[in-house]
Length: 240
Image (cartoon, rainbow, N blue to C red; front, side, top):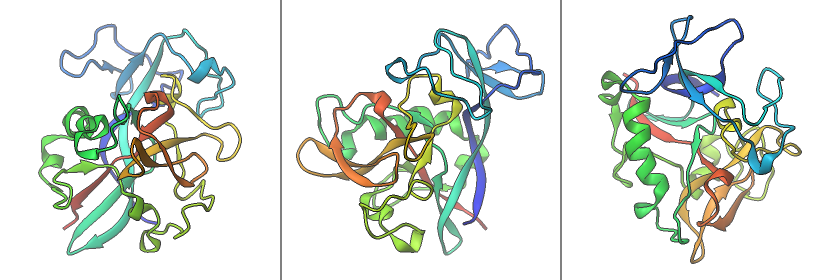
């Protein structure tokens, strides 16, 4: 029930009264806004299976083929536990997506999810001072990772021990506006606004566990298209 803001990633749709510069930053590729924040550009926008009834958080419809800008803003993390001054954090939002493993391999060690988290996400989401207080999770060997199946049924973390229980507001995670315009899957029924996301736990051959949009933890093919399942990163930071 407690949260921290740490790191940053493109998330919310640009407000209509904000203008952005014409030239992107040479390092990040983001555009400076008139409000002093950077923005990520999506052009042209698309929706999953061209499903045009998707809406941004402000209630406006996501229109395919448009150019949108999304605010690079602090990431909100839920604190799952604090042990000896170190906090285990889980993102409150699905921040991005990638294929687990093309070809169906379900080994997290060699997965595309792990490679993206260790590479693009870690290098872009955190400043040097923030990286300095992130700890390596010894059982994984990484500073940023996705949670395990056991994490998602851990009652100490606030989740149900029943993987088949609908927990659309507890295990379920919403898509950012940024992903809605990039073609990620979003539920428009149970758990409206939620997407589905990967864990790091292998299931049967070619399958891995994931959290579905309604908060159920189930087994899915590791070879699904990237737009169907996203990433909810976890990390451990020094709180002292």
